[in-house]
Length: 333
View 1: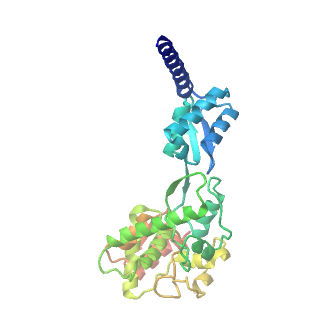
View 2: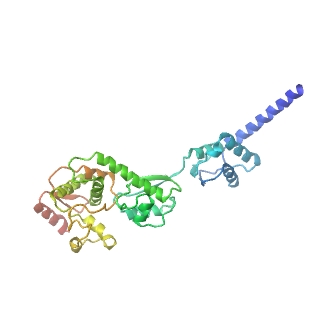
C-alpha cells in the first residue's frame, strides 16, 4: 500500500511539474522584438501553425514547447476554430493569447475610400490597385464587372456608394464591389423613404441620376439643396437641365478639360442642352448628401445658377438676372 501511495505521490508531483512547465511556456511571452504581423493562410492546421511559430523563432523550438502548444490546441478545441487572416501580434503576446486572437478572427483591417464624384472607372481602378484586395476579375469592362457581382444588365455608373470601407486582407475585388453596390442600394432606399412629396421622379433610379448631377455641380454643402431645387423646378416646367457635367460625361475621353460651344450644340444622350429630362444613367458616384438633396430640394423660385469662380454659385430667378450674373462671373474671367 505504501508503494502505491508513494507511486501516486510521485505521479502527482510529475503531473504538477508538467503542468507548471506547460503554463510557464504557454503563458510566457513569445520571442518577439516588437509588434509583428502574422498571416494565416486559409486551411492552415494547428500543427502547421505551431511548426511555423517554431521555425520563425517566435516559439521556443524545444520539443516540449511545441508539444505543449499542439496538445493545448487539441484539448481546448482551438485546432478546429482557427480563422485565416492577417493579425497584429503585440510584443509580449503569449502563445495562449495568440491562439485566442486567431480564434477570435480579429484580423487587421485595411481601408479603401471611394470618393464622392468619382466615376465607376475611377472607383474600379482604385479597387484593382489596392494591394490587400485579391484580384479575381478577368475584365475591367462595366458589363462584365456587373455580371460578376450579380447585377448583369445593370449599368455600372453610380451604383457604388462612396465611403471608406474596411476589410481584411485577401477579400476579393468582387466581394468588395458587391458590398459597395449593396451599400448604395441601402442608402438610396433609406433616402427614398424619407423623400419630399410631389417630386418629378417615377422611381429611385431617377433620383440617383439627379443626385449624381448635383454631386458634380457643387462641393459646397449648403448649395446642394438649392441646386436640386433649380433642377426639380426645371423638370416640372419642362425646361432642359442644361448642365455641363452631363455633357462632359458624355464626351468621355474626348474631353480635354475645356468645354466648348460646339460640345453644347452637338446632340448626344447625355447632352442636357439638346435633350429634355434626365440623362439615361448617373454620371458619377453620389454621396448621401447629394441623394438627400435630390429627394429634398430646397424651396424657392430660382431657375438658373452660374459659378462665381470661388466654388460657390450665383442663383437667379429670371433669365435677365442670370445673364447679368454670367457677364459678371464668367465672361469677365
